[in-house]
Every structure is written in C-alpha cells, then in structure tokens.
Image (tube, rainbow, N blue to C red; front, side, top):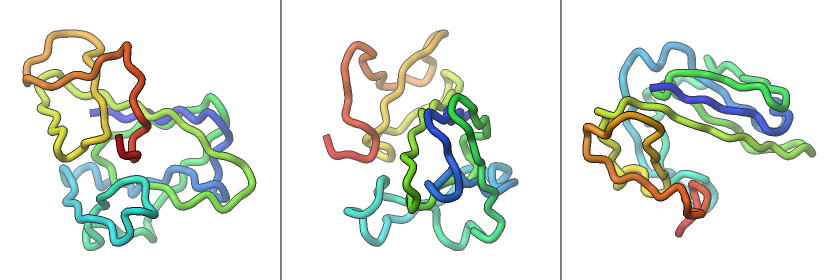
Length: 138
C-alpha cells in the first residue's frame, strides 16, 4: 500500500509537518489504543506508545506542490501547528483491490475504486457526494 501526501501550503517544523519513524513499515500493521482526550484530537485512536520511539522521527518538510510517497504502514503523524502559517495537505492511499477495508476501524474514511475490479467486497463511497472531512463527526 502506498500513501501520498501532497502539500498544498508550505509544511515545516513550526506548522506541524508530517513526521515518520523510519523502518516501522517492516513490522506490519501497528496496534492502536483510544486517545486520552478525543475532543482535542483529529483521530480517535493512536499507535500504542511501546511501538514507537518518537526520538527517531524524521520531519518531512515540503514546499507547496511537493509530495511525500511512503508505505502506508509506516508510523507517521504531525505535531500541532504552533506557527503563524497554515498547513494544508491532501493525502491519498492506494491499496490492492483484494485488500479488505474495515469501515468500523476507520469510520470517517471513504474509499473509491480507482480502477480494476473489487475482489474483497469493499463498501465504496459515492464520488459524486461531498462528505465531512476525516476526523469530524458526520
């Protein structure tokens, strides 16, 4: 699976650029736990603390229209935006059509069949509809 983050605005350490933990994609999928303060977070879950060493994090600084390509299983995240510049990005994930997407684990994510034939029985979203952004309650 591949994940692409396209920076729409300058993404720096000050405004909370994407950070990755190199090599963590080699361990398969991470285990998740609920976040302590869900009202203050974008996502309701996070990687278990014992599965990541934040001191190894590498910052991905991007200019507008630059992109980061990485394995979707790599542990990644971003710090809060503490700067004066906004941060906007578009993230797209690609996975094979024989991979089963589990909506219950990702209730605010929408998937679309880009090409080929679905072989996993996935529930695809309607590309003609507008959905709330991920992390918001519908």
